[in-house]
Image (tube, rainbow over all chains, first blue to last red; front, top):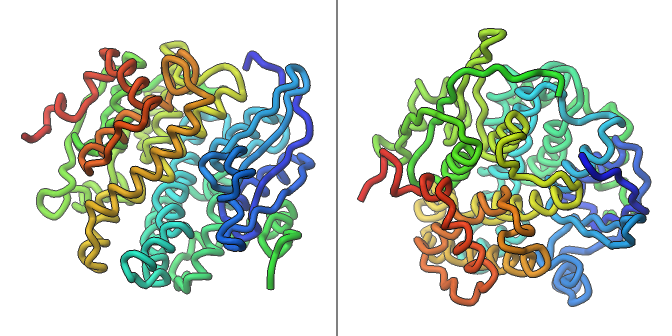
Length: 226
Length: 226
């Protein structure tokens, strides 16, 4: 990289139960980056992500959003989309617990697994899709989410057969694990029977012992609700 | 990177009208990489991606899939998920037309835009989702796809206001443009009125003059149908 990073405090706009916000919290924790959370309630007041104030920050009206100042140029930057934020944090702080490998093919395998979740599972069971399905198509949103998560995790389980070690890809924690954990939380919310997913469950057990993952779970956030 | 790449011929499993395959074709062209296409028809015979033979190669039963040999280790590798493939090609051949910037924040902006398309638009209008919507929920798939593409491109149009130059991010072609072009094709397929998207249309015009983009369009593929 040409630019040497000199960034001020990171502010994360997030919602406790947003799985995409959760991914970023894990990465910030793994990178030992101190950050401030500003909570955007996705349901209250018709969704605080739709306010004029927040729309100015993120025209896509979604969380997470990472905002920070470049202390050299004094410019304020904002990055949306969890995968863009995660890759940015990895590139900016590569020395602190890399979540990608140094091997080109292994990096690709990590990205394959996290995109499997980020593109083929999470978006289709995302809140906004479920709302439209229920309102405009009179569809059963629980059944819809259940099925897409189940089908997607079946794919992930198959990929893990050849990629896994202690974690999703070999024996090092990676972005693949960062994306898997929040998706399993959603799987349980929508009553997916995980008992057949042997690889996924073993990896989840190994990952769940890591303090930085524990601190990122929804129930441990200040805006968590009972 | 530690590993110095020494890869054999690239084989791309693809389908002419798959927008995710299209992204990879553009990147291969931009990187001047010769490759062989093996065509997987997503509709014929109930979908050739579901055959036993292809499932062994890609348990996720999707295109694109990139297969190649590491000539040093003699191992055959396969990478699925278009974003994993695109990032792999960029990292493996950074010297030939970089599709990311060297600036950390600009790279993040490019990734924000391409993930906006890869996560918030394409998956929800993907063939398999439309099939389930129609079959199990009696939903109008054209209306569904139309609306999600329209809403998503409205977000992209807003983001481009501050990011664009000649292309999506400044004046260099990037992954953001690579992902935008196939999404616009799908927008037209599903009758989205693009006339209000001033930034998107201007960028599309600039991109469409690039030979490598022209060669990647569905109609120019050997498996294209009338």
